[in-house]
Image 1 (cartoon, helix red, strand yellow):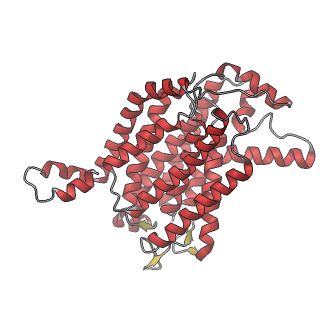
Image 2: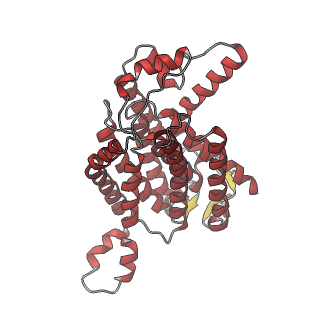
Image 3: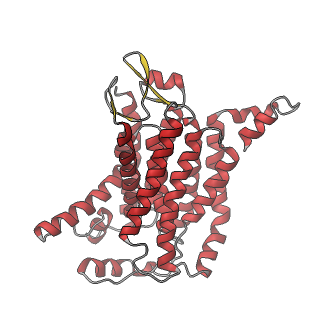
Length: 380
Protein backbone atom coordinates (compact mmCIF):
# COMPACT_ATOMS: atom_id res chain seq x y z
CA UNK A 1 0.00 0.00 0.00
CA UNK A 2 2.73 2.48 0.90
CA UNK A 3 4.52 2.00 -2.46
CA UNK A 4 1.18 2.61 -4.20
CA UNK A 5 0.55 5.77 -2.18
CA UNK A 6 4.05 6.93 -3.01
CA UNK A 7 3.30 6.65 -6.70
CA UNK A 8 0.14 8.72 -6.23
CA UNK A 9 1.94 11.35 -4.15
CA UNK A 10 4.95 11.57 -6.43
CA UNK A 11 4.34 15.19 -7.28
CA UNK A 12 2.56 16.16 -4.09
CA UNK A 13 4.11 18.89 -1.98
CA UNK A 14 5.38 17.80 1.41
CA UNK A 15 5.46 14.09 0.48
CA UNK A 16 9.23 13.94 -0.03
CA UNK A 17 9.83 12.45 3.43
CA UNK A 18 7.96 9.34 2.27
CA UNK A 19 10.71 8.70 -0.30
CA UNK A 20 12.58 6.74 2.34
CA UNK A 21 10.07 3.92 1.75
CA UNK A 22 11.44 3.54 -1.76
CA UNK A 23 14.30 1.61 -0.20
CA UNK A 24 13.80 -2.14 0.16
CA UNK A 25 15.91 -2.21 3.32
CA UNK A 26 13.71 0.41 5.02
CA UNK A 27 10.50 -1.40 4.16
CA UNK A 28 12.00 -4.73 5.20
CA UNK A 29 13.01 -3.32 8.57
CA UNK A 30 9.57 -1.78 9.04
CA UNK A 31 7.86 -5.03 8.01
CA UNK A 32 9.87 -7.02 10.56
CA UNK A 33 9.15 -4.53 13.34
CA UNK A 34 5.46 -4.15 12.51
CA UNK A 35 4.91 -7.89 12.21
CA UNK A 36 6.60 -8.46 15.57
CA UNK A 37 4.58 -5.73 17.31
CA UNK A 38 1.33 -7.01 15.82
CA UNK A 39 2.12 -10.53 17.01
CA UNK A 40 2.80 -9.29 20.54
CA UNK A 41 -0.36 -7.18 20.64
CA UNK A 42 -2.68 -9.71 19.02
CA UNK A 43 -1.16 -12.77 20.70
CA UNK A 44 -3.09 -12.75 24.01
CA UNK A 45 -6.40 -12.13 22.22
CA UNK A 46 -5.79 -14.88 19.66
CA UNK A 47 -4.71 -17.37 22.34
CA UNK A 48 -7.81 -16.57 24.43
CA UNK A 49 -10.03 -16.91 21.35
CA UNK A 50 -8.53 -20.30 20.46
CA UNK A 51 -9.04 -21.46 24.06
CA UNK A 52 -12.71 -20.43 24.05
CA UNK A 53 -13.22 -22.22 20.74
CA UNK A 54 -11.70 -25.37 22.30
CA UNK A 55 -8.86 -25.39 19.77
CA UNK A 56 -6.61 -27.22 22.22
CA UNK A 57 -3.78 -29.70 21.80
CA UNK A 58 -4.75 -33.31 22.37
CA UNK A 59 -1.95 -35.77 23.17
CA UNK A 60 -3.17 -38.99 21.55
CA UNK A 61 -2.27 -42.20 23.37
CA UNK A 62 -2.02 -44.43 20.28
CA UNK A 63 -0.95 -48.03 20.21
CA UNK A 64 2.74 -48.81 20.01
CA UNK A 65 5.72 -48.28 22.26
CA UNK A 66 6.82 -45.03 20.62
CA UNK A 67 3.38 -43.46 20.66
CA UNK A 68 2.84 -44.27 24.33
CA UNK A 69 6.25 -42.88 25.22
CA UNK A 70 5.51 -39.68 23.35
CA UNK A 71 2.16 -39.35 25.09
CA UNK A 72 3.87 -39.74 28.45
CA UNK A 73 6.63 -37.24 27.65
CA UNK A 74 4.21 -34.61 26.37
CA UNK A 75 1.27 -35.23 28.70
CA UNK A 76 1.76 -31.79 30.28
CA UNK A 77 1.10 -30.14 26.90
CA UNK A 78 -2.45 -31.40 26.67
CA UNK A 79 -4.99 -28.58 26.59
CA UNK A 80 -2.62 -25.89 25.28
CA UNK A 81 -4.35 -23.84 22.53
CA UNK A 82 -3.26 -24.72 19.01
CA UNK A 83 -3.80 -23.33 15.48
CA UNK A 84 -1.70 -20.34 16.55
CA UNK A 85 -0.40 -20.16 13.00
CA UNK A 86 -3.26 -17.78 12.26
CA UNK A 87 -1.47 -15.24 14.47
CA UNK A 88 1.60 -15.36 12.23
CA UNK A 89 -0.49 -15.25 9.07
CA UNK A 90 -2.43 -12.19 10.24
CA UNK A 91 0.74 -10.34 11.23
CA UNK A 92 2.43 -11.10 7.90
CA UNK A 93 -0.59 -10.14 5.79
CA UNK A 94 -1.12 -6.82 7.57
CA UNK A 95 2.57 -5.93 7.38
CA UNK A 96 3.06 -6.87 3.74
CA UNK A 97 -0.29 -5.33 2.84
CA UNK A 98 1.02 -1.98 4.06
CA UNK A 99 4.64 -2.26 2.93
CA UNK A 100 4.66 -4.57 -0.09
CA UNK A 101 4.71 -3.55 -3.74
CA UNK A 102 2.07 -5.73 -5.36
CA UNK A 103 2.97 -4.55 -8.84
CA UNK A 104 5.68 -7.25 -8.67
CA UNK A 105 4.18 -10.66 -9.62
CA UNK A 106 6.66 -12.62 -7.50
CA UNK A 107 5.21 -11.13 -4.31
CA UNK A 108 1.64 -12.17 -5.10
CA UNK A 109 2.83 -15.62 -6.16
CA UNK A 110 4.78 -16.14 -2.93
CA UNK A 111 1.69 -15.15 -0.92
CA UNK A 112 -0.38 -17.63 -2.92
CA UNK A 113 2.05 -20.42 -2.03
CA UNK A 114 1.99 -19.37 1.62
CA UNK A 115 -1.80 -19.15 1.90
CA UNK A 116 -2.43 -22.23 -0.24
CA UNK A 117 -0.46 -24.48 2.07
CA UNK A 118 -1.80 -22.67 5.13
CA UNK A 119 -5.30 -23.56 3.93
CA UNK A 120 -4.34 -27.25 3.74
CA UNK A 121 -2.98 -27.10 7.29
CA UNK A 122 -6.10 -25.24 8.47
CA UNK A 123 -8.35 -27.93 6.97
CA UNK A 124 -6.35 -30.59 8.83
CA UNK A 125 -6.55 -28.68 12.13
CA UNK A 126 -10.26 -27.94 11.63
CA UNK A 127 -11.13 -31.59 11.14
CA UNK A 128 -9.11 -32.58 14.19
CA UNK A 129 -10.34 -29.90 16.59
CA UNK A 130 -13.83 -28.94 15.40
CA UNK A 131 -15.06 -32.12 13.74
CA UNK A 132 -13.26 -34.28 16.33
CA UNK A 133 -11.67 -36.40 13.61
CA UNK A 134 -8.44 -37.53 15.25
CA UNK A 135 -6.81 -38.35 11.91
CA UNK A 136 -7.61 -34.95 10.37
CA UNK A 137 -7.29 -34.61 6.63
CA UNK A 138 -6.64 -38.00 5.03
CA UNK A 139 -3.24 -38.75 3.51
CA UNK A 140 -4.85 -38.89 0.08
CA UNK A 141 -6.60 -35.58 0.67
CA UNK A 142 -3.34 -33.94 1.74
CA UNK A 143 -1.44 -35.18 -1.30
CA UNK A 144 -4.17 -34.12 -3.73
CA UNK A 145 -4.38 -30.68 -2.10
CA UNK A 146 -0.61 -30.20 -2.10
CA UNK A 147 -0.30 -31.27 -5.73
CA UNK A 148 -3.17 -28.94 -6.70
CA UNK A 149 -1.63 -25.89 -4.99
CA UNK A 150 1.82 -26.72 -6.36
CA UNK A 151 0.48 -27.14 -9.89
CA UNK A 152 -1.29 -23.80 -9.83
CA UNK A 153 1.80 -22.12 -8.40
CA UNK A 154 4.07 -23.59 -11.08
CA UNK A 155 1.66 -22.86 -13.91
CA UNK A 156 1.22 -19.22 -12.91
CA UNK A 157 4.98 -18.89 -12.41
CA UNK A 158 5.68 -20.07 -15.96
CA UNK A 159 2.99 -17.71 -17.26
CA UNK A 160 4.00 -14.58 -15.35
CA UNK A 161 7.69 -14.93 -14.54
CA UNK A 162 9.30 -16.41 -17.64
CA UNK A 163 10.79 -13.03 -18.61
CA UNK A 164 11.66 -11.93 -15.08
CA UNK A 165 14.43 -14.43 -14.30
CA UNK A 166 17.79 -13.98 -16.03
CA UNK A 167 21.30 -15.30 -15.53
CA UNK A 168 24.58 -14.36 -17.16
CA UNK A 169 25.81 -17.55 -18.83
CA UNK A 170 29.17 -17.16 -20.61
CA UNK A 171 28.66 -13.41 -20.78
CA UNK A 172 25.14 -13.57 -22.20
CA UNK A 173 21.91 -12.84 -20.35
CA UNK A 174 19.81 -16.02 -20.45
CA UNK A 175 16.25 -16.60 -19.25
CA UNK A 176 16.32 -19.36 -16.65
CA UNK A 177 12.80 -19.44 -15.21
CA UNK A 178 12.36 -23.02 -16.41
CA UNK A 179 15.86 -24.17 -15.56
CA UNK A 180 17.87 -25.45 -12.64
CA UNK A 181 20.74 -23.19 -11.54
CA UNK A 182 23.42 -25.39 -10.01
CA UNK A 183 25.24 -24.26 -6.86
CA UNK A 184 29.03 -23.84 -6.63
CA UNK A 185 29.44 -23.56 -10.41
CA UNK A 186 28.97 -20.73 -12.89
CA UNK A 187 27.81 -20.67 -16.48
CA UNK A 188 25.91 -23.93 -15.99
CA UNK A 189 22.12 -24.23 -16.07
CA UNK A 190 19.90 -27.23 -16.79
CA UNK A 191 16.79 -26.33 -18.82
CA UNK A 192 13.90 -28.56 -17.71
CA UNK A 193 10.98 -26.94 -19.56
CA UNK A 194 7.58 -28.18 -18.40
CA UNK A 195 9.27 -30.56 -15.98
CA UNK A 196 9.48 -27.48 -13.79
CA UNK A 197 5.86 -28.15 -12.76
CA UNK A 198 6.48 -31.55 -11.08
CA UNK A 199 9.77 -30.18 -9.73
CA UNK A 200 7.95 -27.25 -8.09
CA UNK A 201 5.34 -29.60 -6.65
CA UNK A 202 8.12 -31.73 -5.17
CA UNK A 203 9.89 -28.73 -3.59
CA UNK A 204 6.72 -27.23 -2.12
CA UNK A 205 5.34 -30.52 -0.82
CA UNK A 206 8.66 -31.66 0.64
CA UNK A 207 9.33 -28.33 2.34
CA UNK A 208 5.85 -27.97 3.85
CA UNK A 209 5.89 -31.54 5.15
CA UNK A 210 9.44 -31.20 6.51
CA UNK A 211 8.53 -28.09 8.51
CA UNK A 212 5.41 -29.86 9.71
CA UNK A 213 7.53 -32.76 11.00
CA UNK A 214 9.90 -30.33 12.74
CA UNK A 215 7.04 -28.76 14.68
CA UNK A 216 7.18 -31.15 17.61
CA UNK A 217 8.81 -29.18 20.44
CA UNK A 218 8.09 -25.74 21.90
CA UNK A 219 9.53 -23.05 19.62
CA UNK A 220 11.51 -25.48 17.47
CA UNK A 221 9.89 -24.89 14.05
CA UNK A 222 9.52 -21.13 14.56
CA UNK A 223 13.15 -20.71 15.66
CA UNK A 224 14.59 -22.77 12.82
CA UNK A 225 12.37 -20.97 10.30
CA UNK A 226 13.59 -17.63 11.65
CA UNK A 227 17.21 -18.44 10.73
CA UNK A 228 16.24 -19.71 7.28
CA UNK A 229 14.01 -16.70 6.59
CA UNK A 230 16.72 -14.22 7.61
CA UNK A 231 19.17 -15.88 5.24
CA UNK A 232 16.72 -15.99 2.34
CA UNK A 233 15.71 -12.38 2.96
CA UNK A 234 19.33 -11.29 2.38
CA UNK A 235 19.65 -13.56 -0.66
CA UNK A 236 16.38 -12.29 -2.15
CA UNK A 237 17.55 -8.70 -1.72
CA UNK A 238 20.83 -9.45 -3.53
CA UNK A 239 19.07 -11.35 -6.31
CA UNK A 240 16.70 -8.43 -6.79
CA UNK A 241 19.66 -6.11 -7.52
CA UNK A 242 21.25 -6.34 -10.97
CA UNK A 243 24.65 -5.13 -9.74
CA UNK A 244 24.81 -7.58 -6.82
CA UNK A 245 23.59 -10.56 -8.87
CA UNK A 246 26.16 -9.89 -11.59
CA UNK A 247 28.97 -9.51 -9.05
CA UNK A 248 28.04 -12.73 -7.21
CA UNK A 249 27.26 -14.58 -10.48
CA UNK A 250 23.77 -15.56 -9.31
CA UNK A 251 20.41 -15.23 -11.10
CA UNK A 252 18.66 -11.87 -11.22
CA UNK A 253 14.91 -11.89 -10.52
CA UNK A 254 12.97 -8.72 -11.16
CA UNK A 255 11.03 -7.74 -8.05
CA UNK A 256 12.83 -10.20 -5.75
CA UNK A 257 13.44 -7.34 -3.33
CA UNK A 258 9.75 -7.56 -2.42
CA UNK A 259 10.36 -11.13 -1.30
CA UNK A 260 12.98 -9.75 1.09
CA UNK A 261 10.26 -7.53 2.58
CA UNK A 262 7.89 -10.52 2.84
CA UNK A 263 10.53 -12.68 4.51
CA UNK A 264 11.34 -9.86 6.92
CA UNK A 265 7.66 -9.82 7.88
CA UNK A 266 7.92 -13.58 8.39
CA UNK A 267 10.93 -13.07 10.68
CA UNK A 268 8.96 -10.57 12.78
CA UNK A 269 6.01 -12.96 12.96
CA UNK A 270 8.27 -15.83 14.07
CA UNK A 271 9.84 -13.67 16.77
CA UNK A 272 6.42 -12.55 17.99
CA UNK A 273 5.09 -16.09 17.95
CA UNK A 274 8.13 -17.32 19.89
CA UNK A 275 7.19 -14.82 22.60
CA UNK A 276 4.25 -17.14 23.38
CA UNK A 277 5.52 -20.42 21.92
CA UNK A 278 8.89 -20.60 23.72
CA UNK A 279 9.18 -23.39 26.29
CA UNK A 280 6.84 -23.85 28.10
CA UNK A 281 4.50 -22.95 25.24
CA UNK A 282 1.30 -20.98 25.73
CA UNK A 283 0.18 -21.78 22.18
CA UNK A 284 1.13 -24.13 19.34
CA UNK A 285 1.14 -23.18 15.66
CA UNK A 286 -0.63 -26.34 14.50
CA UNK A 287 -0.57 -27.56 10.92
CA UNK A 288 -1.97 -24.16 9.93
CA UNK A 289 1.32 -22.54 10.90
CA UNK A 290 3.81 -25.25 9.97
CA UNK A 291 2.36 -25.85 6.50
CA UNK A 292 2.27 -22.09 5.94
CA UNK A 293 5.94 -21.72 6.89
CA UNK A 294 7.01 -24.55 4.59
CA UNK A 295 4.86 -23.26 1.75
CA UNK A 296 6.36 -19.79 1.97
CA UNK A 297 9.98 -20.95 2.22
CA UNK A 298 9.51 -23.37 -0.68
CA UNK A 299 7.79 -20.71 -2.80
CA UNK A 300 10.57 -18.18 -2.25
CA UNK A 301 13.28 -20.76 -3.02
CA UNK A 302 11.59 -21.52 -6.35
CA UNK A 303 11.01 -17.86 -7.21
CA UNK A 304 14.64 -16.85 -6.66
CA UNK A 305 16.06 -20.06 -8.16
CA UNK A 306 17.76 -21.14 -4.94
CA UNK A 307 16.23 -24.57 -4.42
CA UNK A 308 19.65 -26.10 -3.71
CA UNK A 309 20.40 -23.40 -1.14
CA UNK A 310 17.21 -24.40 0.68
CA UNK A 311 18.72 -27.84 1.30
CA UNK A 312 21.64 -26.18 3.09
CA UNK A 313 19.84 -23.42 4.96
CA UNK A 314 16.97 -25.74 5.84
CA UNK A 315 19.30 -28.54 6.90
CA UNK A 316 17.37 -29.11 10.13
CA UNK A 317 14.16 -29.62 8.14
CA UNK A 318 16.01 -32.02 5.83
CA UNK A 319 17.39 -34.02 8.76
CA UNK A 320 13.96 -34.25 10.42
CA UNK A 321 12.31 -35.49 7.22
CA UNK A 322 15.12 -37.95 6.44
CA UNK A 323 14.94 -39.40 9.94
CA UNK A 324 11.28 -40.28 9.38
CA UNK A 325 11.94 -41.74 5.91
CA UNK A 326 14.84 -43.84 7.18
CA UNK A 327 12.93 -44.98 10.25
CA UNK A 328 9.88 -46.08 8.29
CA UNK A 329 11.97 -47.71 5.55
CA UNK A 330 14.17 -49.58 8.00
CA UNK A 331 11.22 -50.89 10.00
CA UNK A 332 9.37 -52.08 6.91
CA UNK A 333 12.43 -53.77 5.39
CA UNK A 334 14.31 -54.98 8.47
CA UNK A 335 11.75 -54.75 11.28
CA UNK A 336 14.34 -52.67 13.13
CA UNK A 337 14.40 -49.02 14.09
CA UNK A 338 17.39 -46.77 13.43
CA UNK A 339 16.35 -44.06 15.88
CA UNK A 340 14.80 -44.32 19.31
CA UNK A 341 11.91 -42.34 17.87
CA UNK A 342 11.35 -40.22 14.77
CA UNK A 343 11.42 -37.34 13.86
CA UNK A 344 14.98 -36.66 14.97
CA UNK A 345 14.16 -34.31 17.85
CA UNK A 346 12.19 -37.09 19.55
CA UNK A 347 15.22 -39.39 19.22
CA UNK A 348 17.19 -37.04 21.48
CA UNK A 349 14.21 -36.42 23.73
CA UNK A 350 13.72 -40.11 24.34
CA UNK A 351 17.43 -40.38 25.02
CA UNK A 352 16.98 -38.13 28.04
CA UNK A 353 18.12 -34.77 26.64
CA UNK A 354 15.93 -31.98 28.11
CA UNK A 355 13.51 -30.42 25.65
CA UNK A 356 14.87 -26.90 26.15
CA UNK A 357 18.42 -28.09 25.39
CA UNK A 358 17.34 -29.88 22.20
CA UNK A 359 15.57 -26.73 21.01
CA UNK A 360 18.55 -24.46 21.76
CA UNK A 361 21.00 -26.79 20.00
CA UNK A 362 18.78 -27.09 16.93
CA UNK A 363 18.51 -23.28 16.83
CA UNK A 364 22.30 -22.99 16.99
CA UNK A 365 22.77 -25.48 14.15
CA UNK A 366 20.13 -23.73 12.04
CA UNK A 367 21.87 -20.37 12.55
CA UNK A 368 25.21 -21.87 11.47
CA UNK A 369 23.57 -23.41 8.41
CA UNK A 370 22.08 -20.03 7.51
CA UNK A 371 25.54 -18.45 7.70
CA UNK A 372 26.96 -21.28 5.60
CA UNK A 373 24.23 -20.66 3.05
CA UNK A 374 25.25 -17.01 2.72
CA UNK A 375 28.90 -17.97 2.36
CA UNK A 376 28.10 -20.31 -0.55
CA UNK A 377 27.02 -17.32 -2.64
CA UNK A 378 30.70 -16.56 -3.23
CA UNK A 379 31.52 -20.12 -4.25
CA UNK A 380 31.07 -19.85 -8.00
